Length: 103
Figure 1 (tube, rainbow, N blue to C red):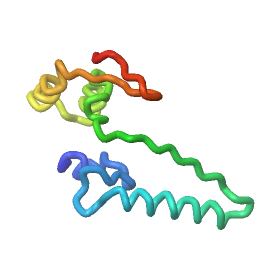
Figure 2 (cartoon, rainbow, N blue to C red):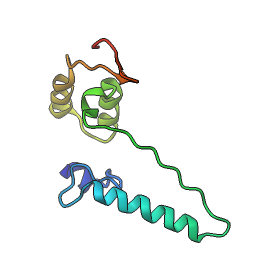
Figure 3 (tube, rainbow, N blue to C red):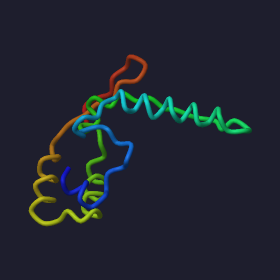
Figure 4 (cartoon, rainbow, N blue to C red):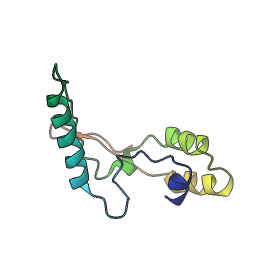
């Protein structure tokens, strides 16, 4: 996290894994976006997508994540450790009550 902060790689609205931030902050940002859109003439549309990402880390596309991490400047032993940590993890997807096989 220190690397992301120091290199300004974390989005301003990210609240996950930030001290003194929570989902309440996200609700505030959404509410403020809706209010701002309604105050404009003509009204600006506001869209929202809600995802339950409670186990998102286990469902992420590992190869893409490694590529993104590498492109931010993390290399060498740190990148190798992250890659080894992610290797061999399994995941499944639940949709409409049905669950996929573990991959």
